Length: 61
Image (tube, rainbow, N blue to C red; front, side):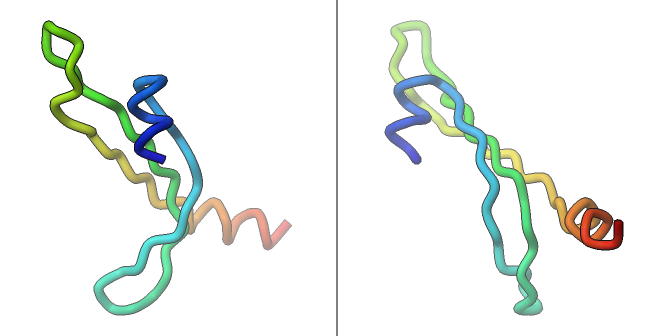
């Protein structure tokens, strides 16, 4: 996951995270490598989108 992010600069995938109450939450995670002016990766930014509403909507159709 991290090697792919470093190689391409961005990676997006679906995964499951655990809520603090113990329930599992399906999410889409996007990792983006942030680079300094010398092209060294300094940070990896993560954005998570909760897709539980989409998953439940899909199962009702």
